[in-house]
Image 1 (cartoon, helix red, strand yellow):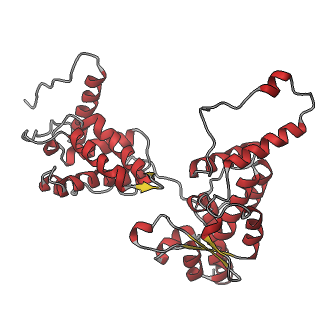
Image 2 (image 1 turned 45 degrees about the horizontal axis):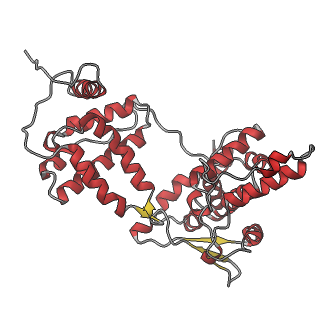
Image 3 (image 1 turned 30 degrees about the horizontal axis):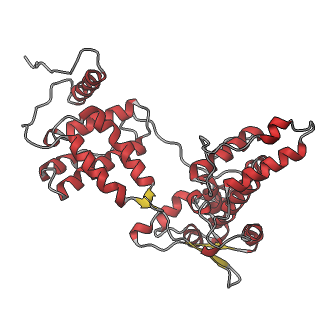
Length: 369
């Protein structure tokens, strides 16, 4: 009989439920058979994770704080910690990784995101091998787990990012702050990423030439040694001018300024006089959600979502503005120009962002088809 007793922990405890979920997922991934149990004698997965994130906190740094990749690595490790935290690292094999992946499918993550998380988990074990915390054969075994393939998994597919119609963009502008409206318009004209427009400062813009050049100190591909420049033509320069009258090291678009303008406008529209208690009311010294000096990618996206709801227009997100710009540049000036504007090293990447001009295909087929 293929049977074995497992101690899950105290009855009905959170620990026992986690262990049950882990064993069940592992059993299903192994064709509804019990997996072979490896020998004991290595550090626990929790110890590996603790050591890795001590390193990652200083490796994935932006502006002196843990960056986006650090957060992504933490997200990838959550399920590993929950299912296999107390297991020895030399027991974490391909079947364990597939069990984690199965849970990610159950949690309704898309296929591409699941593959990214699995790769990040492998990266943790690779670091463990490098630092002699994990036996090399464990990493070799984990590398045998193939990525989920399109059409061959129950994981859902993510929707492709499409350009956003200019009419939908213009409909939102009256319902967002001046700061957010300016960022939207700049993104649409230049193809900047959301993470690039929120970091814009006067000192980063070279205004000596007819075309202004935005030099980024940090960007998505900086760790690969690539340079990133963004170009501002006459239309973008006109938008930018009113935001450059500040200290060179201050961010052009500030939620603090947006809130001050919003409060001033509310006071101006006020019909009833302010009560004495309201006049004496001082701002909270420790507000729960203190406004920052610059927008984050998330706060910028939330501000756009708020404007979309107020405008009643179709939903779109700021990264689609980059696709819209890339599509327009490719249509009018070719793929090479779109590659330069979007800052891609390889044209194949630009193909994803700059949607092919379908109208050209329609015109051709009307003549030959």
